[in-house]
Image (spheres, rainbow, N blue to C red):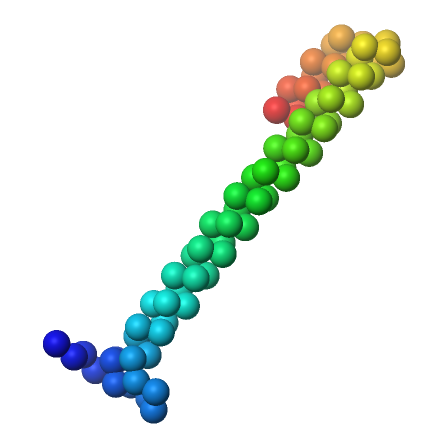
Length: 73
């Protein structure tokens, strides 16, 4: 069954094209979000590692270490 939007415009099948564009935008957004999560996790791990080093070298107290770690996680 053909609806009015299928023949809209000179190219026809506009609705199908819009669905395809929407699909690819969603795929790109999903991939982008996964990459952002990965980099956020990597930055948090790096920050916790730096805190551990400072604590191990007695540059910060245990109280400071625990407070800053709680803020990061």
